[in-house]
Image: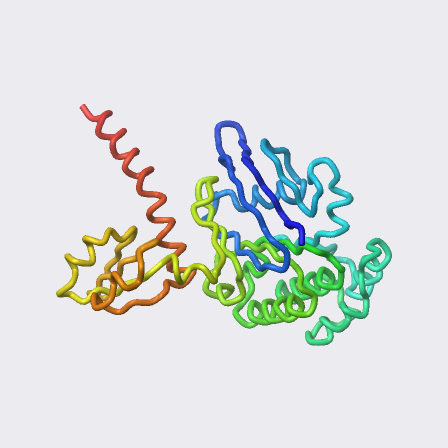
Length: 300
């Protein structure tokens, strides 16, 4: 099957600020990809280029379409949920269903009703009467009922409580299994989605710092909780990240055979959240060092 998203040498500036810095990545069909980064890292800008919402330098193809040139054709096959879903507050739920059914030829009203049946949302309620969690559930029902090949989610559960977040991802995953959609999502709540993801794309200061399939992380990365008597031996193997936690030393290694670490402590594959924190700390180190050097040079 053809690649869903292909980005090559993608760059975007806002004045002197570099939002994307020569970024290249691809998304394959039937995958759930987590686009993960800190605030201001470039996640939203990347999504805007994919959706044809901003100009850019480089090349982007989504479903074989260049987003900036033919956004109408693209959005007939792509659905999008933003972090702040905007639905008119005066609109009733029933009228929202009527509207989408009237304007989108790929909308399956029966499917939307099935999703809403698992919620407490009344069809007669107006959007303004719903909680933020219910509005997100309604938006999800409308989106999942559209037969789209790509679903893009930008912080879809931001501000929701734990129960609503869990319900959202359960509904999303069940639909994904049924429809085999490709999903690209951003989130700050990494721990809640890491079991859903098939791929991770870490981005920091406009650059991709990790692009990997989740299944490959176990062979690429190792996390060692070091036995005290083996600290020097473990350091000699050049971990890319080290931290102290409750008196224990934890080291992360990349592309080091696991058998090199046998007998040095407790060994496991790092979770995606732990790996993200480590990669962000490592990526920030050169900037911090550069700023320190500049400050020293400016001192009298």
